[in-house]
Length: 327
Image (cartoon, rainbow, N blue to C red; front, side, top):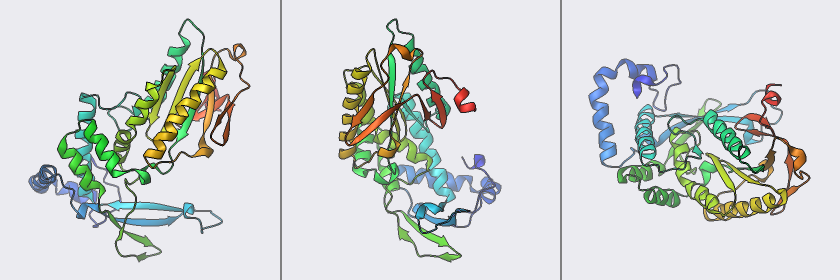
C-alpha cells in the first residue's frame, strides 16, 4: 500500500512525509507488517492513528468570513492510519464483492464502481424500461442526505455490519476506529490543543463511503420491497428513486409511498434529507403521450417536474441526450 501512495502530499500530523516513508520502506517492511497484523488480530485502531491536525484556510474572494462555509478545513492524518485503513478497505471490498453483501445499485468505493459507473447504470435502467413493449414514462426523485457522516449512529452501523455477516475482526476494528478521535486546529499560525471530534464518520475518508453504504443498505431494501415498478440507485448519500408507469398520477402516488419509506428510515437512523435539494425529473422519448403537468407533494414541499436535471455532476434531459451538458 505504501509504495502506491502519492509522494507530493503535505506532511502528516506527525510531520512524516510520504516520500520519506517510501525511501525507508525496505527497512520498515517487517516492522509495519507486524504492527498492522497486531492491529487486525487485536481488532484495535491505535490511539495515535486517531489523532489528526486540521488546517483552516480562508476561501479566496469572499465578502463575509463570519460564516464557516467561507473556510476550507484540511485534515492532516497519520500516514500509518491511512495505510491501515487502505488494508481494511481492500479486505472489506473483497468480502463485499465475494459474498454480495451490498446491492448492485449501491455505488462508491466498491471495486470498479465509481461515478461514471453509477451514471452508466442509470442510463441502462432507463433504456431497459424504454425497451418494454408497453410504453412507460419514468419519474426520478433525487434525495440528498445532509451531513451524512456526522449523523451515523455507531450502534446502527455496527449492527448492520453484523447482520450482513461481516467478519468479526472487521466489525470490532471498525468500532475501535470510530471511537475517541482527536484533532488540533491550526489557524493563522496558531495551534490549539487536541480536541475531541464529534463527527461519527469523518467525511472524505475512503473508508467512510463504504461504511455509509452498509449504513443505508436497509433503506435500499425497503424501497425495493414496495410492490410498485421501482428502481433505486444509491451513490453514497445521493438516493435516486426511479418509478415507471403508463399514468403520471400513479407514478406520483408511488413516489409518495417511496418517500414515506425514506422518511421513516431517516427518523430511525437520525439522518436528514436536504429539502432544498429535492429534484424531480422525467425520462421519456415521447412526452406528448403523457400528462406532464404534475407536481409531487411530499410533507410541506411541492416539487415541480423538470425536463432536465443534474445527476452525478452531469446534466441530463428527458431523452438522455448529452448536448445540454456539453453546452
